[in-house]
Length: 336
Image 1 (cartoon, helix red, strand yellow):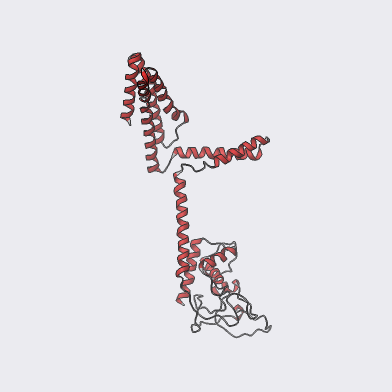
Image 2: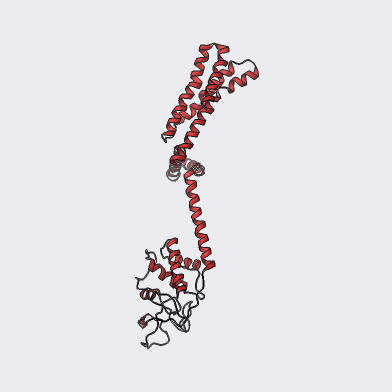
């Protein structure tokens, strides 16, 4: 690049010297290629410092070689010489821009900072904010309409040339694709567990049982652990479903005049506070909510259906925590 700039300056000196003498040629080279070289060093230094170059510097890199090109063209005889003389000074322009571009790319690669792109993005955002405010509040209707159109034109430029923004958007998309694949595989390879009647643990208080709405006189026999929303199925010491649904209670809700077990009762059996929508949940509460939702239908809900019911119920929990809790729930069922 340096050799190209030097060759352009030497060519300009030789071309103008033949028409105006060496003194005039030296001045033309100093005003054209020399000043361009100074601006190129300024641009290179600002780029290495991670700063955006002023507009006057960028404009000078093109205007000064163009002036030298015009002087050389005027000193030429014939069309062929005019073209050659006019093109020769542009070598310095290409050399300066090339050095600045390479330096900017080196800084972006090593530091991850593109000062020029950030400067342009900041200018676009400032202009967009100004035009949006003027479109909303300016007293003149014509000015409001102009700013409205200008804001839409600026909106197309937001994020343009921002490599950092592009990489972040790709990371977001990769995470979504990974999550979708995880959910799909979980639905495909989840093993349906058929509960048995043999594994029964210690009884609990009858108050946690579904009670028949048709029999107002409750009895006090002891029965196996049951959890609301599991269709009356018994649990082991880890709150894992191990027995078949209680006769008269469908997994999908109230059947045969029997009231289904509530989420409060599920939480009481699990020994955790009752989960409430729009409140942060612990890992144990997440398992309780998913267990309750899973067995609100017959057959039990899949992961995707349970997550949909979880969101519809306004419960709070991140996708990763929900997947972990679901894995723990399935593991408990398979162990049982």
